[in-house]
Image (tube, rainbow, N blue to C red; front, top):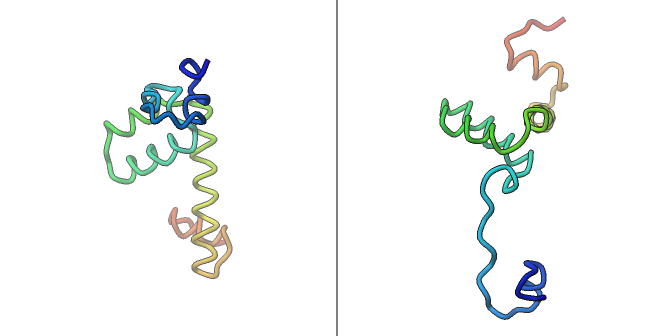
Length: 97
């Protein structure tokens, strides 16, 4: 059994090589995909952007990007001692109300 189950191999401490890294959709979570996607967009790296878009479903990617935007906005707002809305409007070049 230990030879067949990856978790048993890790627990056995036999020094066996870890299982090979997974490729494709199963190897990445939505937050990793979102981070790579947004960073690639910021760096204008179309190849990496397209690759990250294949790691998860479009809905998962959208959720991850939204979560990243919210967290980044909250961090910037705290650093600037401003409201998240003020920072968001400033970043997007939208006038304050």
